[in-house]
Image (cartoon, rainbow, N blue to C red; front, top):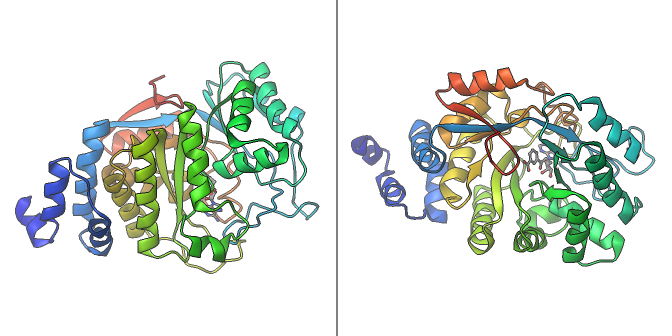
Length: 361
Ligand code: V47
């Protein structure tokens, strides 16, 4: 292996990985520029095996997108709609509860809830949503509201981030999903989502949550107008934040889908970029316990191969995903437990059903 790594010019990076040392931004840039995809996957596989062995985690979960009304209207998003626009919707608390009730006989352990930044749903709507779900299904873990939504809810309520998080946790919030991070670069935010919470504030909300004992995830939306350097800066900012708080559970690279967005026509990410991004995320984010191959965006086949490129989590059963499907994803809206387990086993890994906090179920 050493000879091959030498021929590929990657032996010094391997030496660092073998010694448990960090790779630098320059190393990450070299990996992105390297044509030796299987070697990059092999390197990431070393870190994956060190942290997670052969385990590949998945969760029996349900997604609910309570409203697509959004004041941000980011250029990359096909989901968000202006209030009153055709196809805009908002769910009442009763509707949300009925979605939970409909699936009460299924062994769902997590409900994943995100929505747009609604201009006038009151502060209490968010608290009541959590309380009502807990009344209907007390044992379920609620992973809800991205850091961007948390900042919005705090603003609606005229409260600090910390007080808002206290109220949400008291009402039933268990953890925070990783959305809204996009790419932290001010250049990208200025061009694609000028109204969105700035990257440094997204990190602050996450760190505030971590300091209160609330776990969060982190994402990166890639494959639009960002440069490789901007991707790497994003990863480095997450690595630094995680060094401080250790509160991130999982990193999820999100492959951009352009259909029905203001960026329609930008070509889809390809398999090489998807796999390199998974692998380089695994290598840079050495302090993140988990890297997720989100099958909804990658497609089931690439997600399965990603398990050999550093990913150790396939997300879950999902059902009714809207954000990617409105942007043209052709993947299914749900996968059964048996299908997920088959994908994992055929890739040579061991499926482990988990709860939100990565405890085996
Ligand atoms: O924040 C929006 C992204 C995110 C598009 O935490 C798009 O485990 C691709 O964050 N093409 C929401 N992506 C989804 C999300 C998520 C999903 C699964 C698991 C977890 C987790 C988090 O989707 C948004 C945005 O970054 N997004 N539009 C699009 N056209």
